[in-house]
Amino acid sequence: MSGIKDFQARAPGADYYHELVAELAEANRELNAFAVINESISKGFPVSVKDNICVSGFEATASSRMLKGYVPPFDATCVARLKSKGMGFIGKTVMDEFGFGTFGLNCDIRARNPFDKEYVAGGSSSGSAVATSIISNHASVSESTGGSISTPASMCGVVGFTPTYGAVSRYGLIDYANSLDKIGVMARSASIVREVFDMMRGPDDMDSTSSKSQITDNRHKKLVVVNQLLSNVDPAVRKSFESLLHKLEGEGHSVDYVDMHFINDAVRAYYIISMAEASTTLARYTGYKYGYQHEKFEEKYNQFFSEARENFGLEAKRRIVLGTFIRGANVRSRYYYKALKIRRAIIDSMAKAMKDAFIISPTVPIRTPKASDAERLSPVEVYALDSMTIPPNLAGMPHISFPYDYIDGMPIGAQLTTTHFNDHAVISFVEEWEKAFSYRFKYNIGSL
Image: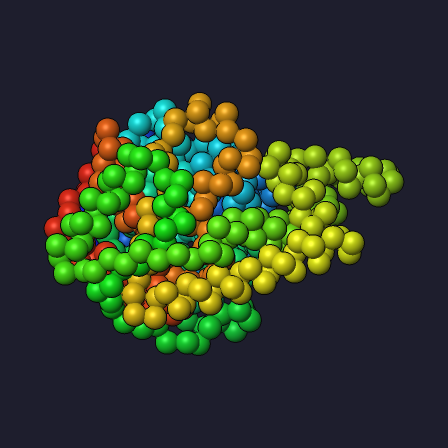
């Protein structure tokens, strides 16, 4: 694998891209990473884009039947900036519908884990993680709301970086929850993550939530482990994670264990806030102007509306119903406003703990499950598995998941979190880690 600059210096010819597309199409029939592959790519470092981020001329459905046939006439800001730097668009990757999922199972086309097809690929950016794991020279532009980058990156053995909220423009993103969505990147190395992030980041007049704040690289030798986050970790994962901590201590890091009491409420607060925002965001898909074109205009509105919105998947319907309830005037103060207060308390607690340190944890509290086992979990059980990834996402803080071990041939990841706009520091940490750790990949499509 080469870096972006090295790849561009080699300037692969048309034959390289022709073979890349052919190999990728063959692998995709088996692994379902891509919703569409750009067969006309002919130059640039290959970059895939999650299907809820707009690319001009290519269908953007967020893996939902509600948006089938929607072809945006413009590029998302992050995509436009990458294209302006000479990056090549290789295709749109599959995902959980509208980003609603932990395992990549809430969609019609399910990506399969490249290490073992019986196992889940993680969600909601499942296709991005699989694409990154199988293509040698590649990065994937993805999106996280509560762990949609970190979780699949961990399960597919790649690096997944989620930036500070506002560091990358969200213009051109099909929203899940406006106050939580963040566009990030997956790659096979932290150095590629850094290059792609630096191309995308910066203020944008088209997105009022984008920030002009400078990105820093304030590195720390102190690592903080939150006791509450480890309480429900699978024994095999915990043993492996403790070995990682021991190794890091041998490399000059110190490890402190701290209590953070509000952290236990993060999952509940996150789902209350995200469902409330999702129900508002999805309200536009009525079958008139946006969403599935029902076209039975002779029907009464309620019937028309209901029939058009039947095209939402089960998890989307669940979140619409719960989110609408949460926003109700008679219950709003009991749930939504309390969740906002918990988010503020978590931001303050995490910032205090990371004044001179990083927070480190396993990325996922369990080993990657088989798809058949994950399907048997209840929604509440699935939501609880986001306990590691939700706190930094709820707080809008930058974090990165990186592979550090393999158990029975399956990758396992750790997550490092830092304070707002200190994004480069966690990338630098993983760059140092990679000097002494060898990643394993079963596929190397497009190697030079």
